[in-house]
Image (cartoon, rainbow, N blue to C red):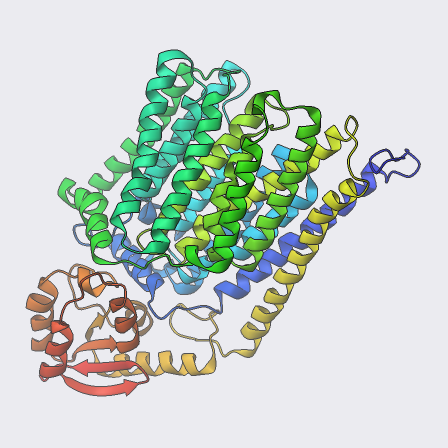
Length: 628
C-alpha cells in the first residue's frame, strides 16, 4: 500500500483533522498578535518617521491644507484614513493609539496572505507557514507607524484575495468594479506603487485577450514593465542594483514569455475592463475632489505627487547591496539552473504525466527552499526568488481558469512590487519580499498537490510522498518556534522596560537608557522653550512636550530636501523670539546624511551653532535657545 492509499480505518477522521487545524490556526493567530504587540510597543526608531506622520495628521485635523501647508510625498488617503480612525479628533492622534490601529491590520494582512494560499491550494501547512512568516516579516511596520505602506500592503492582499475574473457576468462586474476601487485607493496612497500594481494587474488581464487587442495591450504593458527594469539597470551605479535589475528583467521576461505561448482558454471580458475603469475613476474622483475641497490647490497636489517624489529620488539613495552576497548569488544560480533544466524538456504544453510528477517535486523543493531562505534573511533571498516565479504558471493544477490567472497575477505582482526598494532599500526590502514569500508557499502547496495527483499514475521514489508532506510540516514547526522565541523575547522586553510615560505614549516601553534620554530632552523642551525647530524633523519631541513646531509649513525628516525658507525665514524668525529653541540630533542628522546623493555643507547647523546659545546636551541631542 503506497503512502497515499490508506484505508478508511487508518485515515484520521475529517472532523478531528479540522478540529486540530482550527486549534493550530488559533494558536498561530495568538502568537502573531502577541509578536506584533511586543514589536510595536518596544520599538521607537531615532529617525522618527512616526512623529512626522502624527504631526502631519494633527495639522490636517487642525485645518491646515494638505500639501500647501503640510509637506507630504504621499497621497491624500493617508490623511483621510488616519482622520477617520482617529474619529476626527486631534487628541486621538498619539503614539499609543496609532500603534493599536496597526496591530489588528498587521494580523489581518498575514491572515489574508494565508487565506490566498489556502483558497488556491487547500494545503493547510503551507497556509499556516505563510501566516507565521508574513506576520513575522511585517515587523518593519513597527518602525513606520502611520506610514501608508500599511494600507498599501493590505490593499494588495485584498487584490490577491479577490483573485481573477471568474464566474457569471454579474460576478465579473462586481470583481472588476471592486478591483478598480482597490487600485484607486493605492493611487491615493502612493503613486509609484499604484503604477507597479496597475501594470501587473492589466498585463494579467491582457494576456487573456485574443487577437489584436491582446498583442497591442501586452506589447505596451510588457514594454512598460521592462522599461522600468532597463532604466534601473542603467540609472543605478552600483553593481548589486544592476544584478537585481537583471533578475527582475529575467523574471518578467520568463513569466510573460510562458504566458504568451499559452493558448487563451477563458477570454477576458471587455465589459469587465469597463467596470474596472469605472471603479478606478470613481475612487480617484472622490479622493481628488475631497482633497481640493479641504483647501489643497492643484499646484500643491501636483508637487506632492510628482515634484516631491522625483526630488526625493534624486536627492537620497540607500543602495540595495545584498544581491551580490554569496547566499543571494547561490539562490540566483539555482534559479537559472532550474530554468535551463526545465527548458531542456520538450514543449511544456506537451509534458507527460511523468514529467509533471517530477515537476511537482521540483516545485516542492523550490517553494520549501525559498521559504527556509526567507526565514533566514529576506534581504538575501528576494533577488533570487524572482527567478522562480515563472514556476507558478507551469502545469498549474488545474491548468486553466482562475487558478492559472491567480498565479499569473501573483507572479507579475511579486516581480513588479519588488521595485519599491528603490531608491531607499530599508524596511522596503521586507515589504518587497512579502509577495515572493506568498508565491513560494503557493509553489510548495502546488507541488504537494501535483505529487498527490500524479502518484496514482506514475511510480515515484518510495519516500517522495512522505518527504513532500514533511517539508511543509517541519517548516511550520520551525516557524512556530521562531515566532514563539521572538514573541517571548519581545514580551520580556516589554515587561522589564520602564514605560515612556510621555504625552500619548504610556504603553510604549523602551530600554532604560533610551527612556531617560527622551524624557530629559522633553523635560528641557518644556521648561525652556515656547516654540522649537527640530533638526532633522523629529516631531515626536514636539508632540510629547506640547511645544509647537516653529515652522509655519511643516517640513520632513530629510534635511537636504528642506526649502531655503527654513534658514532664511524660519530660523531668523525663531532667533527673534523669546524662548525660541532648536533641537538637534547629531546621530540622526549624520545617519540621514549618509544617504544624501549630494549633501550640502551644513550651513543650517553652522548658523544654529554660531547664533544660538547651547543650553543642554544629553547623548546625541543638543538643545539651543535664542539669545533674546
